Image 1: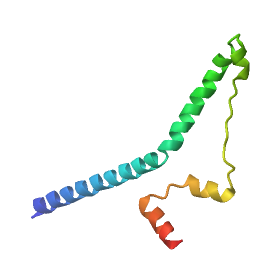
Image 2: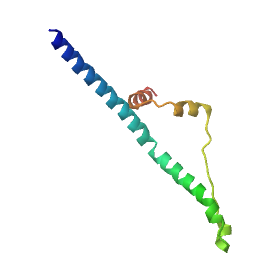
Image 3: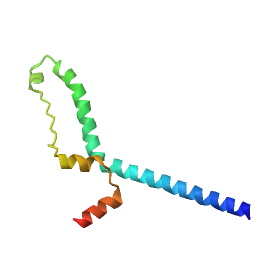
Image 4: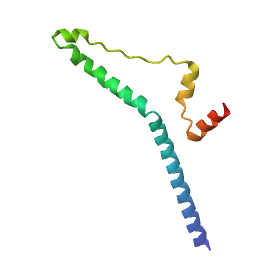
Length: 99
């Protein structure tokens, strides 16, 4: 009887741990996919900022007409608090439904 309980407890704890691992990975994947466009644009801008020095070293007339603008949205204190915390899919849906 003890062996049966041990095997059942081991099996159930393994299933529970694997389920928790899947939930954590799913939540992380959702967070990354939600910010995919923002991270893509940010990476392109950082690469462009690194290449600005190379573009300015040209000695022709076109190099004087090269401009680099970086625009960031104005952040309010309320937005910072909401953006910093990852809510997850279920909490986001609940918050939207309550509004």
